[in-house]
Image 1: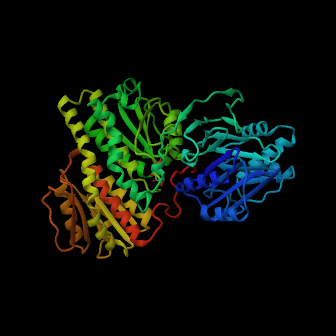
Image 2: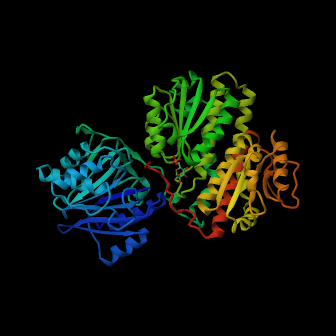
Image 3: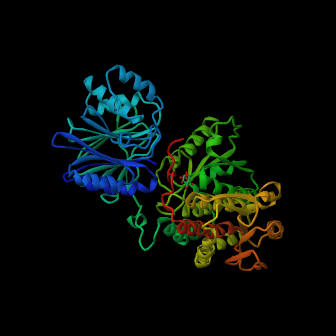
Length: 610
Ligand code: G6P
């Protein structure tokens, strides 16, 4: 969703801002803008649509300045219009960009209107610009005015502010939305996501909840929520620029699908090196936390919810502990019964999904103290709020539709299931060695599945003109059917639903006819014969079947039954291998339908609002 970049330097920062906004495009947005302070004036350009359109407008106006802020907006309060796009300006003096939502904006708007402020947009953000201006007019300097305003705002925000009367600094604030400062040589930066400033620096300071900061060319001063000066550690970001480039691929989603063998190998490296599932995989105090638990509660959204749904099968079967999985936005608003001996596991690629974060906070408020985050973005909000952390090492994921994050999450969750089994004396040395061997083989098996791309491309052509599709799976592969349907609907806009195959005759069979392709995940496991019966139910109604099965299953193609064989059955990790073909099917179907694969309409990469 929304993205922030800002810079103060001895050079023209406009190219830095534009490049930063381009790096933030992947998060999903509908308008973009920049504001700069130059020659005692504040100047701004905003456009709906792509950053490139805003860039062209900035070029035409000959924008050059040593201080500026930029923003990509994903509309929440107020429609997609140029007037609602950020930066917002108060009294032609200060300009501000904002991520998040201000909950008491209406009350503040009324108050400021009474004070004579005139609003030009429908946004909650413009309130903040006028509020800071109001505090300045009461005699506070820019930083103090920001701090005073922050105390009066309810909700979530990351803010960056510049002022033409104060051209040697930028001030920023963070509450509930990520914000980091980038440290350069005689120049400094601010961004909501490190990818925006990697072009200039890797040295970053992550601001914490309630922090404000003053950023000049040569110094950064950070203050905590009480206004006291604090030191926040400097980190060297290991996000590689290469992970932000397309390279030889047509889309980031395609690149990220193909990166999975490497992403998986990186994520399992610590387990393979130790030749054991050690609790320390989840943090240095993990053993004490994990040993005492008597159940697991998983909370997540979107694709991460589906990885949690696979994990439920693994955790119960392998560790013997009960496990529930719940959509975070549901959990956070229901009167849940807390068992403090349950481990709360949040799963999030971005580490900043608002509903997942709020579900975690809610779980803690109910008395849960044992928390683990499975996350792909170091230092993001959710792992920072969790006691234990397992970082997936998928690298930056740019495509809105999650792919490599999902399969690497599965590896982390599998490791959790096995580690819990070990701590509960349910894992013999032989079985542990066998699981490690399964993991060692995994990147190779995934690569074999990727090699099926040409066959899957030919299937995708058959889906191009369809309006609906049904995905079936059973047991641990049912969530893979769900993930396949989600991928297809997200990027190709074909309506797709997934069902546990055994449920077919309780409703969805009524939908089956020659126009409804039915994709079946049918690995050679204990449920294969059951799945075959379900497929016959489809065939008998004239439905066309597209079956992904293992190379060693005794299953053959026939009239109306298309079969693609993934590598030989890989055992317990089979859901990971069977994810690859459904990702490829969605990708190639979207490609043939000509949709915007990496930035599907109406969707965002990081959902930082409700
Ligand atoms: C958005 C993304 C999905 C993602 C979901 C949860 O909907 O488009 O790809 O699965 O958010 O995000 P998270 O970062 O918490 O995994």
